[in-house]
Image (cartoon, rainbow, N blue to C red; front, side, top):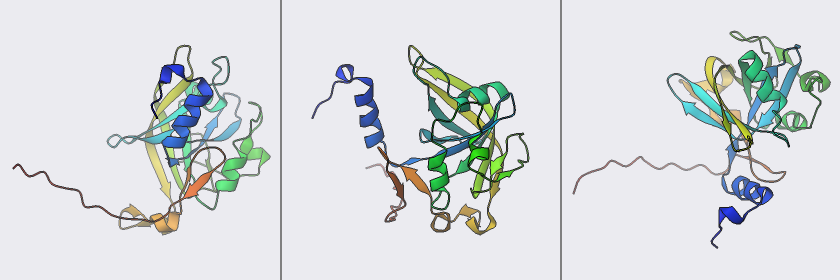
Length: 204
């Protein structure tokens, strides 16, 4: 099948992208509004952006009319956020925070999530997660015309990792049991693992 993007409506583009670019890691982001409301929300347009300095990227789609979501607005205003990683133990709570809460209502408070102090930022981290990346805003890039998404690039300034997950300087994936996002209402765990040695180029 050949698909001309110019012939697709927004929903068709959305379904094609989220059904093809899988699995996607989930950033469970806590942020703080200028009024002190703790926001918690998941985003699956999330990945590593740079190693040194440590940076991550998260794209936050805008609401109809180009209105910023609470998370993006909070990060723009305060310059800080925390990414709480998602696993099989917290995925139900993560899913609950995806509801469309009003901006003046804290998902963390409503759901009784455990708010822990961070080391380098004012935004609290969530005790239901076992890996936390404290971040300071590096840059926001607006995408689309009219604006349809905010690409947030954050610099990681402090990391918390549960002791049992950190073995010989690496994260034990089997113990972490991460959860990723697929399309529709579907999430996924890690399936079969396999290795491939990295090849070396040898001139003929």
